[in-house]
Length: 198
Image (cartoon, rainbow, N blue to C red; front, side, top):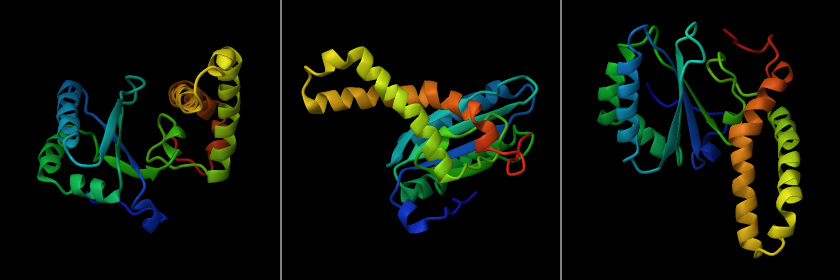
């Protein structure tokens, strides 16, 4: 497989990229698949520009879809990894365990906050919708941090205070708020006439 082009080619070539790979594993091959996926992650971690990987296991036994999300610093770093022999060797073994070939989508920015189980490939909502929903999550998150810790934070130096607040808010956004906001607003973010739900 070759890297797919994004709409803003020149700008995205120097921006961090997130790749979402969906793989539907044949029954009985899950253990072998996860072992190969771990090896793939280990090999990728040694490549310049690698920023991390997360694996999301199937939500239920009825849908054997794994979603692997990994990030690279820029398009050049991603291309080097995807053209490598280290990846090709394991990819061939992984594909032999699947119901159908892997499906893959390259995104950038906050797009990966806006994904739903069973929607594949990832089709991001319009930017203005993502901005509104992100703000609806961000505003109460920041407010809560200052309500709970405002007095203590006021005594902390500005740079440290900003670092602490942004770390807490980003963790809340990524792992608590945005998964819920995406589900709650799915009717608006992913209208069925535009979606590709299974």
